[in-house]
Image (cartoon, rainbow, N blue to C red; front, side, top):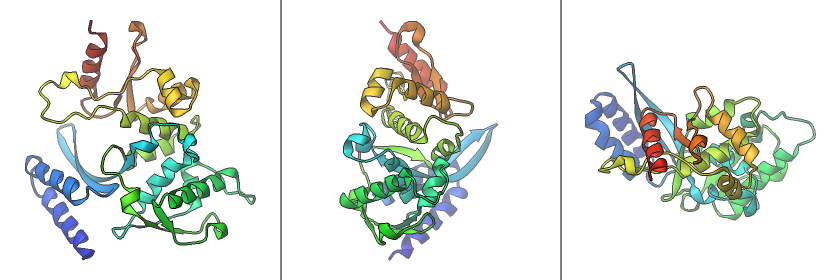
Length: 286
């Protein structure tokens, strides 16, 4: 029964709140990997250590299919608006795989204004939704020809085509919100595209690896390689990295120009210093 999802979830939350971190690590692994493996959006338990205090909170994330990331998505016949549209559909998803979005909500992420004459971006979002429907990823339960900025677009998600079990990149709600909050950025589509590409190409090291220095969890590719893959200019990519690596940014940069190697980028989280150290040693070894 559908309500059993909620009951199990509440039991899970009560359990992890009342038990030590060491005890519930295995429960987190089972719950996220076994119970919600088929979902693109999960609620996960995370522990942060700051000043010796354990701060626990639930954060939403999206498992984004890598097939749409490691390419110039324009070559698929859709715009980069696909990325945030996919994320927003997941964000508003119910356990019955229904979702509701609106053009107004999509516009708010980009900072677009609602005008009397609908701009190109309005129709870009419509094209993205139609693309997803044509690929059987979703079923649109309303007439897109009749919608306005504020109308709720009801969607039924086909989890078999929409969700990705293997070969995906995980982006959290706070990371998406950070990109949405950046003002005077080059282009939020480009920022989101590049960040997804970075996290999709960072090494994922298992905890039982005996030599972690052999597989640093970082990203390093040359600008020409990134530009050719994503269909973006090197100037735009450099500007996007500047915003993503800014104050309290999502990424941390290690400049490698002095040794003529690609710059190294790590996710801004505890332990990034060690990962960068591993990567520097690997890239400069003779």
